[in-house]
Length: 131
Picture (cartoon, rainbow, N blue to C red):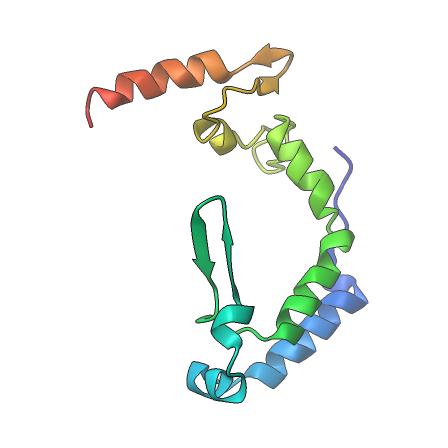
């Protein structure tokens, strides 16, 4: 996998950092008072799950600044690499296989031309005896 670009050298990162400096001292009380629709705007429901991130010190501008970093970080490519078993843990030169633990569809996750799901499922089966 090619060396990743340093995000902290990009204009998008600098804009996010400047925004963070402006957010210093902000409080959730102030953010909710300034935006009556905050709870609705900063929550979503998908697949039976409800995610409420309104209680984080983030604004619409924060989200915009974070989203601007996504293409710089090749986030889509990194997600695809993670789910396909590529070696994205640069420190240990290995894949990050925690996605295999959550792969209840048993879609093959191939590492070095070998599907790791049978081994993962065997360990999970043994662990279920302790639960």
